[in-house]
Image 1 (cartoon, helix red, strand yellow):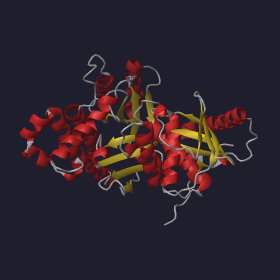
Image 2 (cartoon, rainbow, N blue to C red):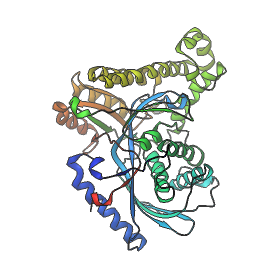
Image 3 (tube, helix red, strand yellow):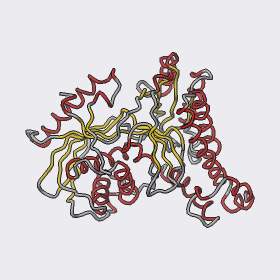
Image 4 (cartoon, rainbow, N blue to C red):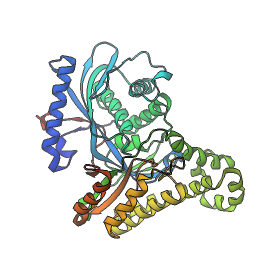
Length: 422
């Protein structure tokens, strides 16, 4: 089946009260592109890829689990023109220019953890899978906060894949394929052992339940939900944590889960069940330690919670949805143990944030760790009547602008209708 290109007006992507600001943002990006590249902009096209929020399935995707995620109205936009020569150039606002030759695509160890590695990796991934790649120059600007748990790197990868799709493949590369190629770039070129959830939510868009049991052909279900109708806002709170030196903490979670799986001679925990763990719990504790066992138990229960979350939304039982969100947060805190770093117990911003959120919500709504954990952000679903006070209480602790009220964006990586911001 042919993939239908997605060309969206900005009114479909952002909250109504932000549209004028977004129009100014897009117009400025076009002018900055023209100034930087000394271009008249005759062949300009504009693209966008969103950040994502994880709603359920905390640290399950890397073991072929289930997740519930959504694209949000914080995004990276790119002003782009094609080039005749075989070079891809990206100038990101506030950063040095990245430039690659599209026929020199081997992994470069010196580029690990740098944006240029993602440009090279996505280009290689597309080319290896038979898609057409060609030259382009782009100017990008982002409001996806780095370290926010909204996955700015996945949005950047998806943006590159979307540019190639529309410039050279008639917009016909399936969003799922773009997500898989984006993950390849992050794993092999950037050097981060991520799962597929971030890229999938950014690329596919909307509210999506994803079952990664077959990693090559994940089952994706779009859930049509209007959060406004439930009287709650989605908030992401930046607790100002430092992600530096936390890669070993993140990497230990999939490593410990995979170690448990390998004990049973399988590749991942999805091929087991909780009963396997319980029957062998003492042997597993002795061999791998208690934390690895607890993280495996979290995996199985979190998979069940994703089904509960999806079913609650489908039947419009928002209280059941909130209950499952709180259960997920509780499990991440106690069993997954990704709310603070054991190597730096002095700094526990996520724990402080969750405590303040719980106080401000007065037993209403829900809150949980957001994304990979250890530092960064928490997520909260806040009743509209408490939103002003909630935001005030959290920003007393973490500073003005630390509490972000987001919109669930119905479209993933896409081309933008330029007439919508002219």
